[in-house]
Length: 347
Image (cartoon, rainbow, N blue to C red; front, side, top):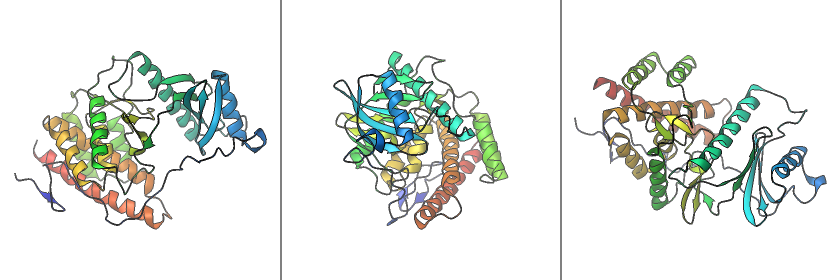
């Protein structure tokens, strides 16, 4: 069969490569670090959550001196500072352990993810992966405090779905770092498998995001992948989780790290690199370079990542920017569905 064409660009069989919506406005910018240090000038000006977080940080690192508040929202607090002469950043859960905090399922899940991230950084002390990441300085799983080396650099994006992607050389470096990580084989038992694929397909089917045919096609591909070796993945390879440092890309936020079907990180990058046709083509080539099974695994991952993003963003009352994003996600999902059906048809 000849490769299909998509938007004037060659498309590899079974793996879509689509460009994003041209001229779309910038979306959902992440909070940028302030130039000063709001909320750190004096105890009276700090929120109760920030005061509790600072107290917890000092418990595990008495030498910590706060310098700037990077982020404070309903989930996390990030504070830049120093531990002695070492630049560090502290990550805490908002008001964790406060008696006034409402214990909800979401809060419990957030705390569990935080503990998994701490466990990942502790594992990296014993088993160093072939990717740059911040060094662990101190951690407290009970109070949900994580103190890390602060990496000089800038995020590859401050948006989950950026319109303006990094420069081509930076994208190539990010893809190279992720692919090197995916080849790493940490000792068995060090990390878990965070994603139950069969359960995820059933969940999105029950939510109406997958049709009966979609679910059947994915189940058929999963059946063929039953004995495929899992691949170590970052698990949340968004551009916003990559710091572009002078020495190269640095991966942060490791709470989803573990064993996945091959290509999960590539599927995440394909999804968020909607405006970079060349990067999508490179990802498609990497996904099927080793044969049919890696291609099928990538397609299963791609469908699940797209469904996750649709569930996250396709909400009532969305503004114009979000509607543009949701429309693009639906278009990408339609391409992925066709690729899955073609893959099932070649079995």
